Length: 155
Image 1 (cartoon, rainbow, N blue to C red):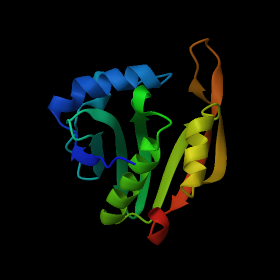
Image 2: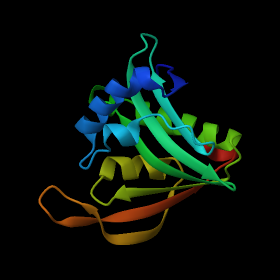
Image 3: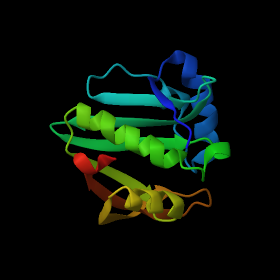
Image 4: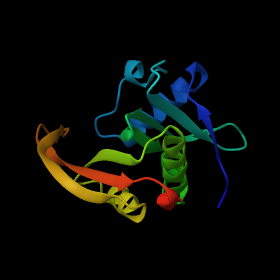
């Protein structure tokens, strides 16, 4: 598997992140939401290859030992190649270094690929939020709440 590196997201990454966000999410974040923030509890990193091409990213928050995955994406040409696993592993290591021992996330019920990845990475289903996510057809779908304990098993 190719090794990629994490870089803090800054303005030079924004146009690529917006492009990926629009391509992979049903309800993408806006450019304003994706712009780098200077919050001391926010972690936002781009995963880049040796050619400095962004292939994925994540946005997390960590407060009092608990982290929340707010947004994560892998560019379509890199999906299904282990990049998501590597990105999530690096994300967990980043959060452990920030003092987190638990990571929470929400995922669309229909997002089977992400759910499978999260389960492989040690996340367990905790709860469900009925009708949480809007769908393009005007309906809604449930959010699944998942949690992983961080530590030595983050690899």
